[in-house]
Image (tube, rainbow, N blue to C red; front, side, top):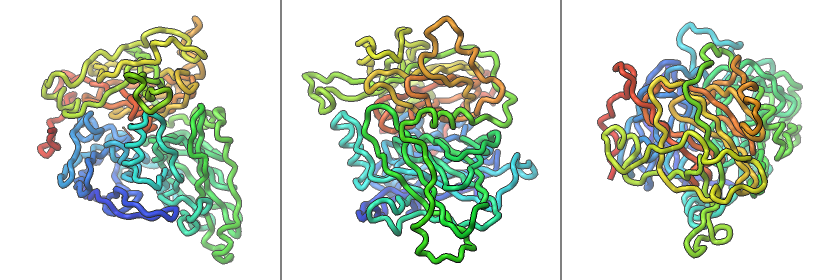
Amino acid sequence: CIAHHYTFTVKEVPYTKLCSTKKILTVNGHFPGPVLKAYKGDTIYVTVRNRANENITMHWHGVEQPRNPWSAGPEYITQCPIRPGSDFTYKVIFSIEDTTVWWHAHSSWTRATVHGLIFIYPWLAEPLPFLEADHEVPLILGEWWKKDVREVVEEFIRTGGAPNVSDALTINGHPGFLYPCSKSDTFHLAVQEGKTYRIRMVNAAMNLILFFAIANHTLTVVGADGHYTKPLNATYITISPGETLDVLLQADQNPENTYYMAARAYQTGNITFNNSTTVGVLRYISSSKAKTSLFSGSYPNLPFYNDTSAAFGFFTKIKSLFSGQVPVQISRRIITTISINLLRCPQNSCAGPNGSRLAASMNNISFVTPSHVDILKAYYLHIKGVYGTRFPDFPPLIFNFTAENQPLFLQTPRLATEVKVVEFGEVVELVIQGTSLVGGGLDHPMHLHGFSFFVVGVGLGNYKISDEDPSSMYNLDDPPYKNTMTVPRNGWIAIRFAAVNPGVWFMHCHFDRHQTWGMNVVFIVKNGIWPNQQILPPPDDLPPCH
Ligand code: C2O
Ligand code: CU
């Protein structure tokens, strides 16, 4: 039996990790938060009661929410925040999603502890495209700071530099026994020999792409970002913030041994990052060995931290299982750069590098989030002065994006709230080009609300520098159908979607530091002519703007 109404009470609860206690935001007292379950096509309601002392909003990551941007969640993009003491009921409309997605807070960095998985089941007699597993295992990879996350953000914004490196990575909230003071705070998975486990997992870390593996066990990927994939056997996986995977695990190894699962960061560019390893324990229930043997097991092999070909070797092996509707003809191609920038401050007054501050941009516009009225409300009610509609179709200059020295003006983007308006029914190809500006280039997990998109192309270097048409390298046969795709360092991706979901939809880098710096854009998809091609009316209890 699956519930159709949930209550999420957001409140602070003390948690102790790494021998240090702090209050964190939780849902119903839990970290990570509860699993939601739904059948494909269901509509569920989640009442979020804010009983904390900061603003909150909730996002249903990977749920397309047809015609219903009111429940999308990003603060000041599609709603004003739910203020302390207030409630708001989200209507979450599942339509085409098949596997695992997730939910998380979408106000400042509150998602660090406010998140959970969503398990989707096929409707009635619809068969699964793989053998049904005996058990399901929720698995959330995360990132933990000993400090209050609000302090981490405050300091990060004030200094204009990079955020403080987190203190631990976690598996289902547990750092694992490799960290000081965490021996008893380790995730344990007990399996039965001969059984199959379906791991439904997400990378909920704030700023890290992760490698993950389980010693001696092959992982069979059968789903990604809410959609079925061709079965893929892997000895390790790469998972970016925001991505979900469905992975089958066979308990087919020697039951007397202890096996570790482990995750650590994949990271390029010249930045400091959390290079520690989180470990969990996999044991067989039938094992006769005493509990003391838990800490003498085998470790999995994980790729080296900056191994780009290992990271993208995994990403590019993901193919969709059903890909009947890949758009072959497009009506519009939008090319956008994504860059890290250094913004000069008056009289070098910022505390970042050389008195400037770090920023991020798309097509040389560093996105400024409105602070009084959200963009959806401004669009729906025709409120002027909240956003502009001049997000360009092309970068300001076609140049060698990945060369050592970039034109100076590209280092200083314009701070603005520019959206991209798209007609209902347009078939959009979006090419996202990474650049080497500041720090020599980084990988960026780009996420779009309101749509799944086909990843038709992924490449290193420039999307177009020679006369050769890059689309000759596209995969239109079985491209993965995703909502988050990582742009390789100094490389590009090409994604396609049909703009048939009217609304206001956020797109951003799922590294929260880059989102905070402005690596964002908003798509407004206009209404179609028929009533069922138009945005639903706003709910009555929409949080008021001040
Ligand atoms: Cu999972 Cu806008 O984010
Ligand atoms: Cu980024």
